[in-house]
Length: 422
Ligand code: BJ8
Image 1 (cartoon, rainbow, N blue to C red):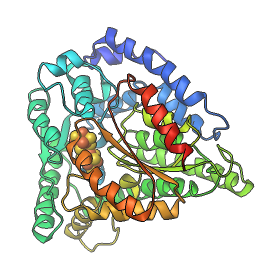
Image 2 (cartoon, rainbow, N blue to C red):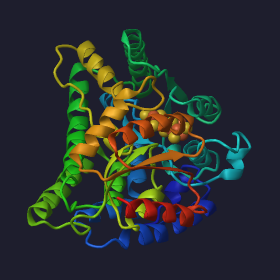
Image 3 (cartoon, protein in one colour):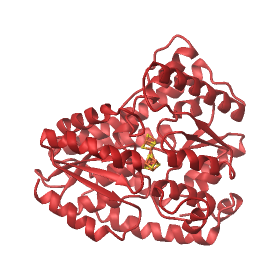
Image 4 (spheres, rainbow, N blue to C red):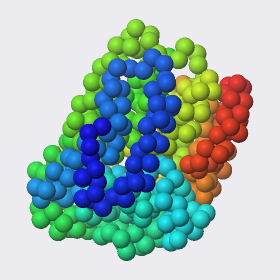
C-alpha cells in the first residue's frame, strides 16, 4: 500500500494505534479470505479494495472535498443514498465490525451495549477511522434505542442530522417518513450548496438501481448447486457496497457476475454439490466482521443467502424510476426506503415472508439466526423467527455473539453439530 500517512495526519488520525489496527487486519484477511479454495478471479478487485481499506478510497474522498465536494456518513439502510448523490455529495456507510477504542467508548457509553454501536463510536472517539474524519455531516436515525441515544452523544463530536424512522408502516407513518425525506433534502442542499433537482435525483436513482441490480444478479447466481462463490466473498462485496464509488463498484460486480455465470454453466463451485446450504438472518455484519461466515464455511456448510442489511435487505427493493416531477420521485424514494423489514418495526411479518421466500428460492437446508449481543430488536424477534421456522420444519440455530473471538471455539462446535444434522 502506498504511503498515506500524511493524508491520515491531515485528517487527525491517531497514527500509532491506527497502524496497529491495519497490521492486525491484514493477517486476519489472509487467514479468512485468501485461504479459501477456488475463488473467482473477479474477487481480485475486492481483495485490492481491502488491501487499500484506509487508502485509495479515502484519498478519493479527500480529492473530492478539496474541490468543494461534501461527504456524508450514515449508519443504516433506511437513509437514502440517492438523496446524497442527487445533492452532489458522496455517501459512506460507517457501521463497523471490530472492537476498537474500548476505553474511550466505555467512558461515554454503557459497557453492555451492542458491539456495532461501540465499534463506530470507538472509531470516532479514538480517531481511528479516516472515513469518519472525512465526513462533513453524519446522518443518524431513530431505529433502535441504542443508536438513537448514541447519536445525541456523537453530536458533541461532529455535525449530526437524525432522521425519525417510524416504527410502523401505516399511512400516518408514511407521511411522517416523507416529511423526514424532505427535511433531509433541505439539510443536504444546505450542506452542499446544490439543489436536488428532478434530473439529479433521476440520475441518482438510476445509478443506485444499477448497483442494486448488480447485487441482485450476484445473489441470484448463488441459487446454483454448487454455488459459484462463497458466502464469505459475497458478504465482503455487500460490505464494500457501502463505501466504494457507485459506478465503479457496479461495473466490478457485473464483471464478476459474468465470470460466475460461466462457472454455473460449467458446474464449477466453491464447494462440492450437495454441501449443506445455509441462510443467515438477523443483525448486519459490518466490515471486518467475518466471524460467523468463517466459522460456518469451515464447518462443512456454505452460506447461500443473507436476510441481513449486509445482504438481501440492502438490494432487494429498487426505487421506482418513473415520476413526472421532483415531488413524485421523492415519494418513490420514501416508499422504497420504508420497504425493508428491520426488527425495529412492529409488527414485522414481512421479514418472515422474506425468510420463507429465500429458503425456497435458494434451496436452504438450515437457518442461522444471528444476533449481536445486546441487540434487543433482533434478540426478541428471534422468538417469531424460530416459531415460524419450526412450524415449517426448517432447522434453525440461534447464534448470539459479539466481535471478540473468545467464543469462537464453542460456536464452531455448535455450528458443526447443526450442520451435521442437516
Ligand atoms: S435497518 S438492522 S442497519 S437499524 S445491531 S445498532 S439494531 S442494537 S444495525 Fe440496523 Fe438499520 Fe435495522 Fe439494518 Fe441497534 Fe441491533 Fe445494534 Fe443494529
